Image (cartoon, rainbow, N blue to C red; front, side, top):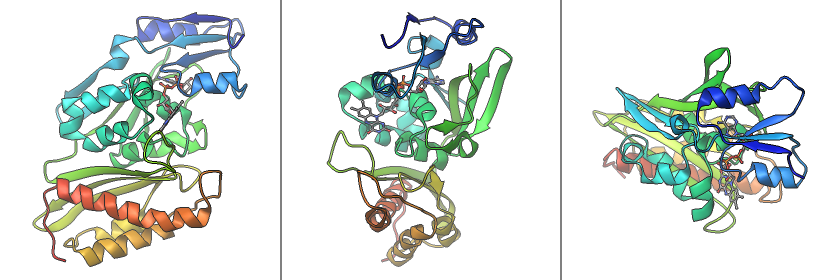
Amino acid sequence: MLYQSYCAPDTIEEALTHLNRTDGARVRPIAGGTDLMVQLRERLVQTDMLVDVSSIPDLKRIWLDGHRLHLGAAATYTQLIESELVHQHAYLLAEAGRLIGGKQIQHMGTIGGNLANASPAGDTLPCLYALDADITIASLEGDRHVAMSEFMRGPRKTALRPHELITQISFDVVPEHAGSAFTKMGLRHSQAISVVDVAAVVGVLDGRIASVRVALGSVAPTIVRSPSVEQMLLRQAPSDDLLDRAAEATRHDIEPITDIRGSAAYRLYVAKPFVRQALDRALERASVSRAS
Ligand SMILES: Cc1cc2nc3c(=O)[nH]c(=O)nc-3n(C[C@H](O)[C@H](O)[C@H](O)COP(=O)(O)OP(=O)(O)OC[C@H]3O[C@@H](n4cnc5c(N)ncnc54)[C@H](O)[C@@H]3O)c2cc1C
């Protein structure tokens, strides 16, 4: 048996009560199960009880509150792809959702599951770095907030404590003068885990880059921001030459490893064109024309 008992609570409080059982039983939240069921079957993870959070209405909502967009942790990729709010205010997340797995995974997989699983190849993670997101974590003691940059501590390691639940992810909307993009390289066009993935949010005011955040996945033990790229672009007028030099600078900020999906040298090589593509698309979406 993969687990002894299962429950599907309707509220966050009820889920937290189950997660805080005091009889020594091992309890885990499950959302879409697209990572966890595989890990249970392969005996990488053991549990006695599963607390299914995928139908808790408060965890499924996507809402705008002033300039902050909030995503319930159990929002699925299909929800991200179909949400008007996501399209309008954080387009890169819809773009990432479309490139994750196939339709079945998009229907089941959740943003909270992607976060808690903390794979360096998790596709929403670079997006949440580039959006400078805040993660709300609930326990029976109350809520706490962790910045995305502090949440992932290493492969499969997070700031989550036992018995806690991610409830929502929030961030400032991408402003009107900015554009966002997500690009991904896998070993085939679809249904592929990232060899390199890149998220960018770029703002342009008066013809110069006024804000820029670039984050990469699958190129280090955690997601990394690229300060070399960001510093090179900031306050400059975008041009092909500048963007090319900035994309080249990515190599100073990444430490790829060799694994079954690609060698470290290959990852270093493909990071540049994918960063360039993400910057180009983000700038296009910020409606910036540039000198060649
Ligand atoms: C065929 C296939 C293709 C895939 N393709 C991709 C891909 O292209 N890109 C990609 O990034 N991933 C991919 N994945 C991995 C997976 O689909 C994603 O990571 C997905 O987002 C996991 O979400 P889930 O809801 O299914 O998580 P689950 O499997 O339910 O849970 C994953 C982990 O998160 C914990 N958890 C879940 N919800 C919460 C919560 N609210 N609070 C605290 N902990 C929680 C669980 O206890 C577990 O440890 C793929 C998986 C498969 C099987």
